[in-house]
Image 1 (cartoon, rainbow, N blue to C red):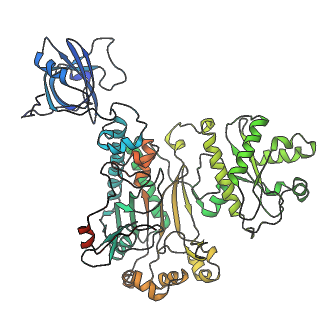
Image 2 (image 1 turned 30 degrees about the vertical axis):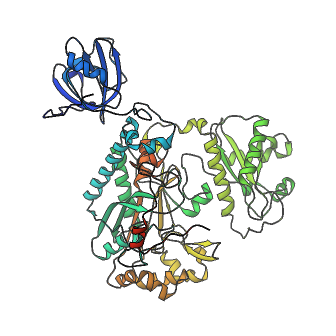
Length: 612
């Protein structure tokens, strides 16, 4: 086959741009053959580029040379077409195509490049084997769905940049090669050839650098920043990811919230959606009590505290632990379940809940069975009154059987609320197809945002038996907690000026008001069990910077990948990242990671050892 050169021929239009008002105009289109249909004297090529598809007609009698080349063309061949736009005959329009009212009658066809038979066709709507898609990502990205996803991501990022720039933020790049600092996950390390035995770390976030930018007087910084974390992967997590990172000098928490709500609204509008601001707010303790999780899905009903509904006598009769709370929740729109279904669900609940660290397993109270005993009807009525189900809803009431006071019980029922919260989410997924109450109606109802505030400053590490930071060690505690001495007397009660932005049960980002005083930062390091010498060794440059007039400052970082995933309606981050990794952190297309040569290892003063 002889391939053509493009020469001086220039593309005049994109494949998705042509409409009936252009009928009669000459055009030059270029792209890939999406499909080919041979009807003898007439050959039809569906020509595809990023913008869409146009049908090309090659008539053997009118253009014999072009027709002969079309006989050689196959799917994914790259071609150029010179021809004239014409309206399709009545009844032959294709309503499923944006260009379905027209076609291009070809006068010339150039075969610019051929293609091997691909392992899958980019014309297909879905390809089941994701590994094949990732190995041949350059073909996968040609699919209309992937083109749409990448465009959504671009428009969202552009809208955010424009909004923040308009609000006086400067986009400033921070280093990719820095030093290892505690961020909550393992660092990716880069060995230094010049400094034997020393390593750079790829940043898990630009945290310290953006705080130093505030010390530097930059006042308002943002960056669409590449970040790296060596952690176990899942559908909404990648080893390298992109976050919308920002920091402000002299802010109140409300200033950060207004800024985020503003750029999120701009981002969602860029994807054709609108938002209602300001977003509701809830403290961490409220979120746990009402939803059992610090990233609540507000589309589903909250949990209901039913403890006061059960008298001491009822608890004794029903063999319910007297010291622990009773919590219930509604499963929307599941209808009436049969006894067999109920029993199967009870078994599933028991399996999912398991045991609670020395407390025997949590259990399920069947409210329908309560009504079969006249003595318990008032209790069933009280439960229904407290939970207020609609006619098609079902009730779940979770209790702790009376098996002796649980070892884990210390007056804090938070662990029970967390268990019940997990169950609530499991059942929401199980019956997702029945939640008609939450079908999409408009953006304001479909996207339920929430600010969660006042997170615990410390969390207990069972492995090391020490307190560690819950957010990061540069977060400011509440001033009254700091002044009261709780850092040492009651670390678990210290609240952080930290906040998360949550959408439909997904954490989009986290932020905080930062520590801006050197004495407070040193006190926090000591509370974390870090000696002054260790703090100086690890953060000396930062502690020094804090002594030179650091302004109060705060900020946040949101996952751009997650936002794009939600707006594209994609099931995982891999659908909105051009070149993602697998769940095992492998790039199948370029086959990375791979071993390197002995020479490279020698230059870096490194040698590999076999795993034991």
